[in-house]
Amino acid sequence: MTKAVSSFFEKHHFSVNKADYNLISALRADMNAKLKGEKAWQEMALTWALPPEKSPVNESVIVIDAGGSNFRSCLVTFDGKGNPLVSEFRKSAMPGLERELSKAEFFDAIADKIEYLKSRADRIGFCFSYSMIITRDGDGIPNSLSKEIKASEVVGVPVGATLRQVLEKRGWNTISHIALLNDTVAALLAGAAGNSGTYSSYIGFILGTGMNGAYIQPAFGGEKRQVVVCENGKFGNFARSDFDLALDNKSQQPGEYMLEKCCSGGYLGSLGLEVLQTAAGEGLVSPESASALKELKNLTLIEMDEFLHTPGKKENVIAACCKDDGDRNTVFELLDALVERCAGYSASILAACLEQCEEGKNQPVCILCNGTTFYKTYRLKERIEFYLSQYAGSIRYEIVGMENDITIGTAIAGLL
Image (tube, rainbow, N blue to C red; front, side, top):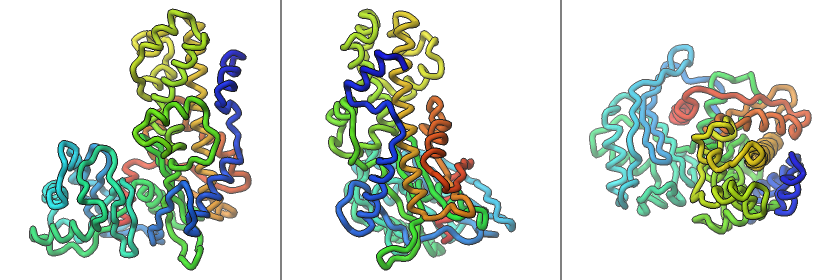
């Protein structure tokens, strides 16, 4: 990193030194405070569940995946050896995107979308990727709906029980159980599928538009060992740069999701724009490049990532702002530092979850990672792996990926 860029970051309290063991300790202290019922930044949702000791065999389950703008449904069948087969897959728009729906309209819309799977299985796994409380019987009660979904009457309603009532009125008399979970738990369960005896514990980590983690918490406070969902992105007890503060003030939820605003795909592009326009105003690039950068109205992670992969591609919106190679190199250093910090913070979350598991001594902990930000952002995956190797110490672990992981994990949840 050039001296000019390094001095710029130092001036704005942006940590160029990414190795921060204090963040891991702070995350863990916050997690344990929440588990004790004390005030904390992170939500710690109990699931009352553990991965099955063996993979399901000769079982079928209907899978629903509702999150973001898409609604997905399919049938998953586990054969005699526990191998999953995904069939009857359909994708459509999520109910409540276009207009406000009543509770009845929302659940009728879901029932309409899965009508084609009627009588194909007696259990449903429902990945509902919104903030919710999981009940001891595996149902989910939403605390809020985000991602532009308009169905306020659904908040506080048991999703599984309500959907089951709607389906029964339509002649679905065979549904014995509907299990609710989020995508992070689904990732964890997918990592456990078929791997009993291979790993000592499991972690699920999502780094896409948002970020979230899940791990298996040992027995605590009278509660049994179980999967716990961590809203890691809500953590805010760490030093933030001037760029982070500026972005937070412009966001729809100021003062919330501070760590997520440093790392997730939903924010990294906007954070990059804050950095570039501040640098332009302070003379780090030529007047011509500075003027062009100041004209940018928004910046997405896709555009930022394209530049980092191919900085010489003139069609890119960032490259087009750069007068010459010198400015292009400076802009590259500025944006690459954001990815580097994201890697350090993400590895800190994984290290905190690893330590919470209290496993990884004789057999490794399985970490299943999911999300386009994790896998597609410029050199992010390998940097997370590097920092985690530094943070984990003697804890053994293995980072894995899996095709159809959320679908398979949701299917397993439906059979628990």
